[in-house]
Each structure stands twice: as C-alpha cells, then as structure tokens.
Length: 333
Image (cartoon, rainbow, N blue to C red; front, side, top):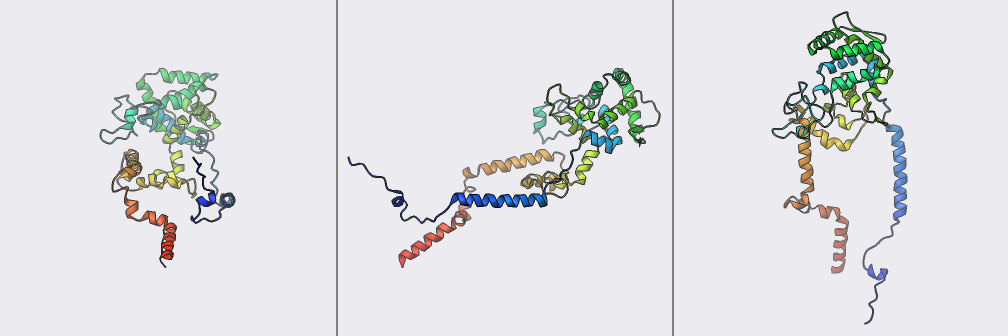
C-alpha cells in the first residue's frame, strides 16, 4: 500500500483566514503596562499602615474599659462567656440546645449546635485566671490573692464581683492605676491591678496565647477578649468596618477593600437580613442556594438555554458572523 502523505501546514490551513500575531510580544507589553499601573496606583492609593490592635494598646488607651471587661469575664456576662458553640454552652452549663448569645438557628436548622463545642473556651479561666496563675510565679501577694479568690464559695465570689463591677462605674484613672473607692471587694482589686499591669507591659498578649508549644500562633484568646470590650468595636465603627457599614468590603480609612465580597455583604444591608438575629445563617443559605444554582445551570432545561435565546453566542462571536456574512455576500455577486 502506498503510504498516505500528511498535508503540510500551509495546505492544512489553506483557505482559513489568518493574521500574524506575536504572543510573546503581546504578553511582554501587557506585563510592562500592568507593572507601571500597579506601581503608580500603589504610590497614590496604597493601603494605610495602621498598627495592629493589641491588649497592650487597649489597656493604655482605655484602662477602665479593660478592667470592666476582665471583671465581666469573671462574672460570665461578656459575649464570649456565653457565646455558644463552637466555644461553649450557656453560661449556666445548661443543655447545649439552650443556645448561647451568638448561636444562630432557623427552625430545626442549627449547624453550630450540630458541630458542637469543638474549640472550648472558658472565658473566666482563659482570659483572667490562667494568665494571672502564670504571672503569679515569684509574686507571693498575687499568688495569695488568686488562691483566696479561687477557694472562696461561689456566693462570696459573686458578692465581690458585683461590688467591684459597681465600683468600676465610678472609678478614675490615675497614672498606671485605675483607682476605685474602698469597698468589700475581697482580692478583686489586687487581681485586676496586676492584670492591668501585665496588659500594659505587653505580657498579657503572650499569656493569652500560651499553649505550651514552641510556636504560639492561635490568636483566638486575644481576639475574643478584645471583642468583649467596647474599645475594639469602637475602632471598627470609626473606620467604617462594622457589618452595617459594609465592613467586609472596606479597609481602614476610606480605602476600598475586597470588592469581590459585595455579593455576600449586600444581603446584610437589606431586609429581612439587616434586622435578623440569625442573619449570618440566612446569608450563608442564600449564597449557598445561588452558588448551587450557578453550578447547575448546564443541567436545568430552560435556564441553560437562556444564553442562546438572548443571542449571547452571536454577540460574543460577532466578528466570526460578520466575516461569514461578507463571505456569502461576495460569493453571490
């Protein structure tokens, strides 16, 4: 048999409209233009270098708010103390179905409860007592105060905490101390003044992250404590970063942030999501439904035909159809 010769490249493409195109040159030009644009925009619109918010900076800026928050952790009245899964159950240790402050449900739909408490956080122990325990080594006065507090009956501790939190409402800041009027606080003032001193020195940030491992990279503790006070949320609101201010899309100041998140944050700005207690769960469900719908477009009759009915293929390939019409017109003449 005679071997069939393969057509040459010129023969293969004969009759097909072509034009010279240097891909490497085009890519090089685009990359050069993009580099110039990025450098210019970085000089004009660079992201602001805002220092991180730490427990140390908080204790210097608003020491009274820090001490009120720490006292609230011992009382179990803060957000994280009664957050619910994944951190804890109700402050009274009730049935997990008795949801905490931040558990969101929709009828029988309760993903947080299904997952349960998988990052256990005891706010009083993690944010106050454990750091003080570590810091009491070599400090007899603090060790005695801490031992007295932990060995006292619950009713007595409750009395100390109630009296001290009331006194903090009328306290004043004097240098490195928060001064409260004399009262029946038990060891509370010693504990709180030492905690404030640790926070101001920067030790508190490390103590809250202490895990016993070589690297401490879990910032859950400091973030929960910061969120329980009013200083950190106040900074967020001032920088237009709260949820009601499209915060997920913004950066500090008036700088634009992740604009691709608008589809997610949009729902928080309109009813019924804007006023719902379970807005996070509702938004997740809506976005999950829309994402599933998008993935199923090729399989849903009618919906998958919309591009063809709307003429999108002819719009996208308009140059091809134009050349085709011209070719037919030339052949008829």
